[in-house]
Image 1: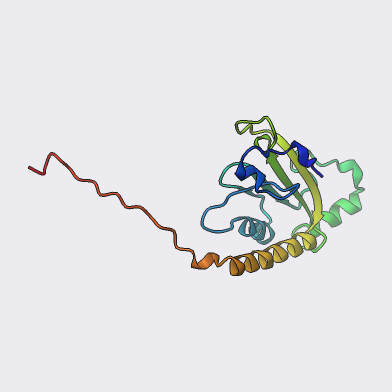
Image 2 (image 1 turned 180 degrees about the vertical axis):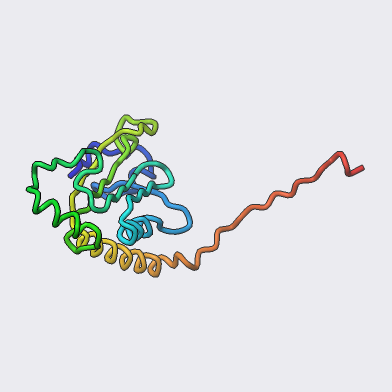
Amino acid sequence: MINDALLKRWSDYWRSRSKGYFLANEYEKDFLIETIAKALQTDEPQYWQSLDPDLTFAVHPKKHSPFLKPNNSLFDDADKTKSEQINKEKQPDDWFTVIAFVDAYNFQNSDTYYDGGIALHMLVERKDVEIFCANLKKEYAEFKKKFKVDEYKPKYVVHRVVNIENKR
């Protein structure tokens, strides 16, 4: 979907990404899966942003578009009443708006974060979000096993501070 020639490639870090991929860093564990799962569980909007604000992922349950007023003329009164009754319960065909935002910093000639960029705005059903979340959880478990993520023990450098005034 994105012309790979537009993405940064000027350093080893930026060249390390696969064609058409974006890089995102996380600290200690994956929070994206938790974000999606929480949106499914609570039906409240949830947001995830990578450690460096390269990527932002927003999940808005039961929303056609979180930024626009609903166009009630699309529904007749009977449909609207039925929709309001059903809306109180979780249904497999509940609409979710999912937005994946990529900061312009990922693109050539961008030397700082812009809080602007491109976004993919998707309207999907709850059942598809559930499948995506389950598949992502499985993929992440395989990744952790393959790269022994849980066995990683970072080495911390401890600096000893000595108060020279009291050491006479």
